[in-house]
Image 1 (cartoon, helix red, strand yellow):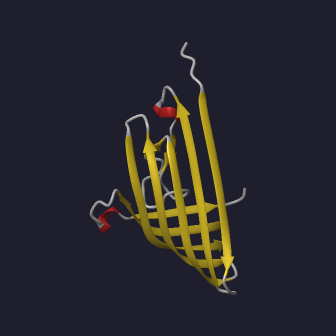
Image 2 (cartoon, one colour):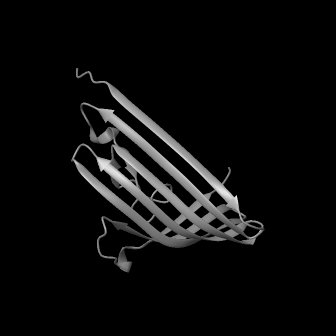
Image 3 (tube, one colour):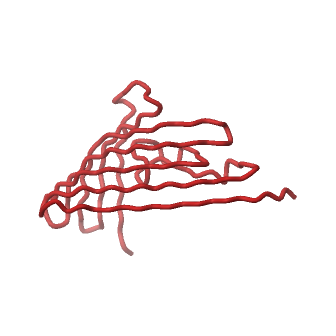
Amino acid sequence: TLKTNQLKIEAEVSYLWLLNQRNALFIKNRSAFLNTSNYLTNELFRLGGAKNIRGFDEERLLASTFSILNLEYRYKTNLDAYLYTITDFGYLNNALVKQNSNLYSLGFGYKFRAKMGVINLSYVLGIINNHQINLQDAKIQFNLKTVF
């Protein structure tokens, strides 16, 4: 058996600034740190997708340390719906393969309540390490939250 000490810290903070009845700004930061003498792939944080750094495939990105900042401008279209912009910034470090990545996401979305639940539809382009922007890499993300 291999015995190693491991330290894992995660934190998330968010705030919604209501500018007036229809306009708001949303900001969220999620950061995490994993320190061990023996990194294993299955212990790394899995990132990407609608829940953290949008515009990338779900859980495709692996990191031992990361910080992701999500910024949204929201325009309320009615009581249960709003249009929003997506601006995400991320820093990822994968100690297993000794690689750092800077991530950016730009896009827009619409979140609304329907009979089946809350639907969130977005169009997002993810950019990694300042690579050339290619609109064919953009993602259409669809989320449905419902109560059974």
